[in-house]
Structure formats: structure tokens, C-alpha cells
Image 1: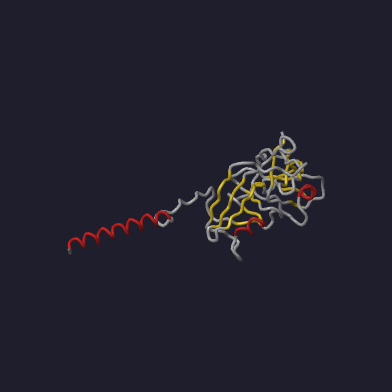
Image 2: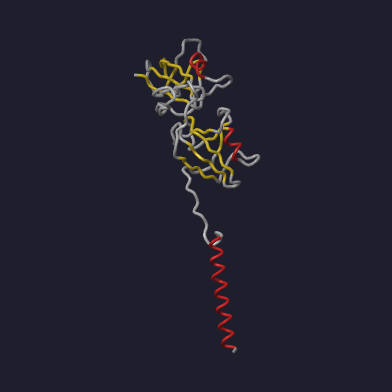
Length: 223
């Protein structure tokens, strides 16, 4: 009788253990979902000077129109954004997008996942045409910039012009502010320590009120 009871007890324990494994697996205790792979590495932050309005981002990796989903892993909040121009980061959020995902008082998201969403490219506002677009309503790829970094200016009372540490005197350049789509065509009149340094008249043609830097820009060499 004792031997039979031991066998019955052992069998009962085995059944309970098997059931526990089955239940644990069914509820996701035994396995965890694989982590999503991020297309960007490092922290995510934002530009306080970025345009107001809908959540958006700039990027040095993805072209204009690319849709990205940014997730803050510390609070599981997400923002779906469209790339509106270039920047010095893999993804740089604007203020509206950052407000959707950040924790109170924090301006950096260190634990994050950035996913590239397949699908539609962002369409411009009705009647608007981006520089380099093939036709109204159909966004084209942004032109490749001949300079990198922000553009500023020097005080000079003259027609729109520029100086440059990269292009010789006489080179014609078109400088576009991607935040407002305003452009100026200038001729290099002398050397400077910048790739392109606008004079006052040229800067006034493209800058936004109160701003002395054009961070989102494209510089094209005109043949």
C-alpha cells in the first residue's frame, strides 16, 4: 500500500508540474517577446526651435516624408512622426512630438526604440511645393546640400551675397531655409571661415523673425 501511495503521489506531482508549465507558457510567463530592433542608436532629444504644429522630426539618415514611430521604453508612450527636413541626429523630435513621449521634466529619452514605418510618404499642404519637387502635390527628394551645419550671417550693407571657406569667388549658391521654404541665390564675394556665410540682405530673405541661425537648410551649387 505504501509503495502504491508513493507512485500515486509522484504521478500527481508530475501532472501538477506539467500543468504549471503549460499555464505559464500560455500566459507568457515562460517566454518573452523579442525586443523590437531600433533603427537609431543613442538618446532621443528635441529641438525647441522646430516648427510648431503637428508632431514631426528631422533626421540625418532618413529622407523627407519618412514616417517613424518613437517609443519611450520607460513609460511605453509613443509618437508617430514624419521627417520634415535634415538635422545632425538620426532622429530629432520637434516640441509637439517630444511632449507625447517624454516624462515630466526630462528633455532626453535614453531608453527608446525608433521604428521605420512602411507606407505613404507625407503629402505637402494643398497648393504648396517643396524645393526640388517634381510637380505640385508630389513631394520629391530634398536636394543634396553642399554644406552641413547651421547658417548664419555677417553685417554688410550690400545686395544679397555670401563668403565661403569652401567655394571660390564667383560661385553661385542657392540657400534654402527648410523651415519656411524661403530661398536666396547668392554669389560668393570672398573667403570666410564657414562653408557659407550670408550677408545681411541674403539672411533677411530666408530667416524667420528673431532668428539669426538657419539650422535646417540646403545649400546648392548652381552651375
